[in-house]
Length: 145
Image (tube, rainbow, N blue to C red):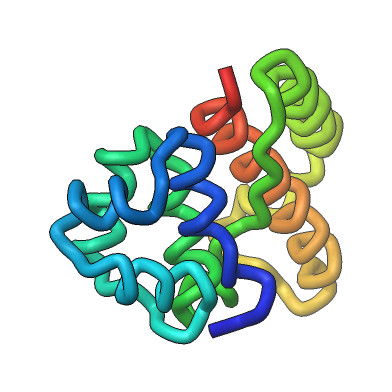
C-alpha cells in the first residue's frame, strides 16, 4: 500500500472517537488486525471498509480507500481535499467558475463529436478542469461539518 494512505483508517477511527479495541469489536475484527490496517501492513477488504464507513460515520473513507489502495483509483479518481464545509463550498464555486470560463472551448471541441489531433491539448486542459470541479464537488459532500 502507498505510504500516503497508511493512516486513513486510523484517522477515520480517531475522528469517530473510538479506541482500537472499541472499533475492532464493532467491526468484528481483532485489535491486532485493525492495527495491521492502521499501520498499512494489510489493506482491509472492501466489506471491512464498508463497515468502517458506517461505524465511523466517515463516507469519505470509502473514496480514500479506493483512491489510495487500488490502481484504478490512483489512476482515474480525482484528488480529494477534505476541508470544512464553507471552504469546500468556496472551492467548488471557484472550480465551477473555471469550467464556466472555458464553456466555449468545451463546445468548440465537442460539437462535432470527436476530438481532433489539433484539439487534444485543449481537451486535456478541459478534462483537468472538469476533474478539479468533480473533486471539489466530492469535497463538499464529504466536508467536515
